[in-house]
Length: 247
Image (cartoon, rainbow, N blue to C red; front, side, top):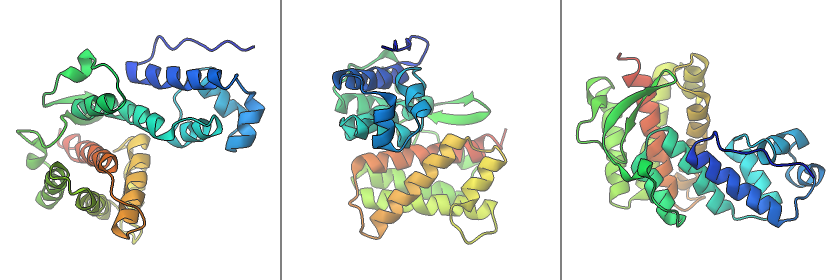
């Protein structure tokens, strides 16, 4: 039987997701990679990289593996969002997710303060909502700042459909400034090609835009966690595009 490689060198949130995924895999008597590949339509090497080698894949891959193992998709989605939240420095959101999952608060998520850090060439704001001083106001177009702050205010009052609609408008407005194209997401792709935003942020943006569009059309009910994820993305997008460029 193949040994599972240790995950000690990974961040706490990444290790937690892999540990729970591997526990699920073990509880199902460690089905073969071929068996999981047949169920998930993912390659054996892709599944092996996640379950055995302990590499974090995209959410769509993790979701397919969880479904193949008959696991709790909602729980693993929140575990995955914790990884994104910690990477973006969204401590309040990470702490909120940890509470929903019944996890003990870590030293990392117990601190909630607003400051700017540079990571991988991109600048992020560490905050769970609109910061007391919003540095975006000095560098981003006022109409975009207004959309972002309106989305934050809507989320704070529980108006999650409005939050998602505002974030969708924000994505399209940022994109319109970057690409002369009728496709609303082409601007995100242009930003990714020019390495203004990381691939993960661009992929997250397409996912958020799709969910928001479904909510606006009445196809999908508004959910608080979708609203929070949309705000996390909006903050990352605005920070990468306008704070980093302003330096």
